[in-house]
Image (cartoon, rainbow, N blue to C red):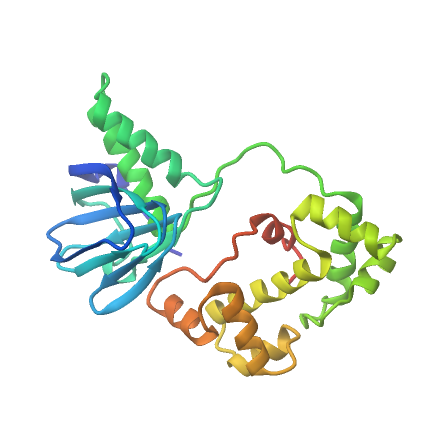
Length: 294
């Protein structure tokens, strides 16, 4: 566990900030950075080229570039791209931070996380300069940096809406079937019997509640578990395919790539260099997975 002490002594100098729109197919760089930069992809997709690596950066990605990095961007070839940025340096003083070489290169913004409102607030403070704006900017910058470094974006809020009773019934059934950690496929008929309704009615409820059919929801959960195993274990791709209920590694790799647009081995490499594990956009389905797997 990283222990942070006296982080209030961090003092930042924010040299520039803004929101930039690039046309489809534009590029930027290469450049050699002299300071730190947060880049937040607001719209479109990009590829961040940093120190010889290509880092995918879809909308919702936050990048933290560092001094002496050589980098550039390939912006979305088909759509405009918008991104916000903050160039900054800081005096660490006696503050304790994780070693620089362990800092993540990028993270995916959580839909209800704290970084998005912090960036909005920081931009407002820098532009409007209300009374006490210097300390407000220092506080927002300090919190944004620490939340990014420690992957601590969470916020307390209202309780999530209760699951539909039929979705909850399937949830309980999957928890039981997968209790040994082996995510065997579950058929629509199995789920409908567990919920005590017809397959047609269960499918209608899942579409309304989660936006996907029951079998597709289960498939996404198995892929989500596979992504977690790739990121957090040394299991081989063959073993992960077996654990997650895929008949063979070839079928698993093809299905994984179709979902995440990246191979399992490439996904593992992304995590190795400090990037986040791939995540599917259906966050409500990911919420449905909470507590299902060990």
